[in-house]
Image: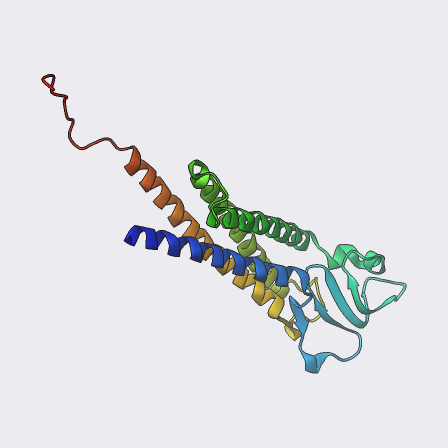
Length: 221
């Protein structure tokens, strides 16, 4: 009974943490509030905010643009409007973050499908261990992508003086916070799935173990 209860708790918590990680990932992936400028410093000709896929400016001009084009409003970061400043606005390290976060989102989606199939009992019993092992591996890889992306973005947003103007006037906003939460929930989910994988392996090893003492048949009977 105790083993069954432990199995149920570990499985449920693994699914809960996976769902929380996926929700936080969707929020941070789709909202443009990773980095923002302090409200009291949002005067004319400034950067306003940005996310993974959107950047907002207020009457801002790029110092290397000799045509003096002004950027206003919020646009998709790959929009034609930002084409003259795309190499500056989307440097290689930021492109790497976009790729890693996209892969992490895909891994979360696959993991949550695997977890649901495992919890509701749709996968064959002999393949349960494979499902849990694959889910654990994918969620840990996603957590690694999220951790690297969070550290890279937080560091670059603070020290890269060649990127967004006046970095001392900017702050990491709530979308970035959801990214960090997604990383923590992914690690917790991976730990639960790893514990479940080890439990299944222990049960299979116990079931395949022979009797402790060999019993020879009596020929008289």
